[in-house]
Image (cartoon, rainbow, N blue to C red; front, side, top):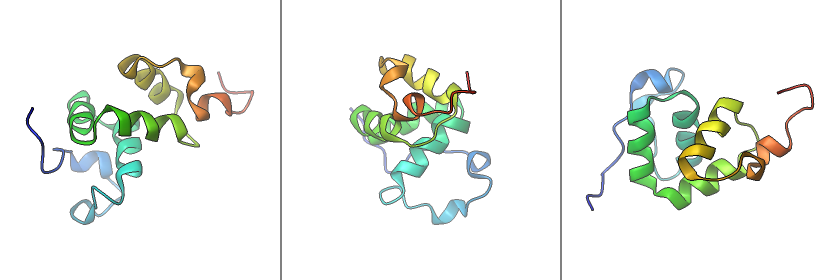
Length: 96
């Protein structure tokens, strides 16, 4: 299996960040979360290949806040029930 130096990500996904200053090791949680919430399908695949499924699962399942769309997508991709995500179990009652 080919290993990547870093995932090929779009600047548009990180519109409010200094893209050149991203630290792919130190900021992995923020990068994974941002890509799953706003990235393209290709970015999600690149990120999963780069970080590995276990790190993706750990990051998304323990995230304090994720959009429902992100939880639903991660649930399908990672084959994990939505109810196992911290941010799904702890969302305000008024959200669907």
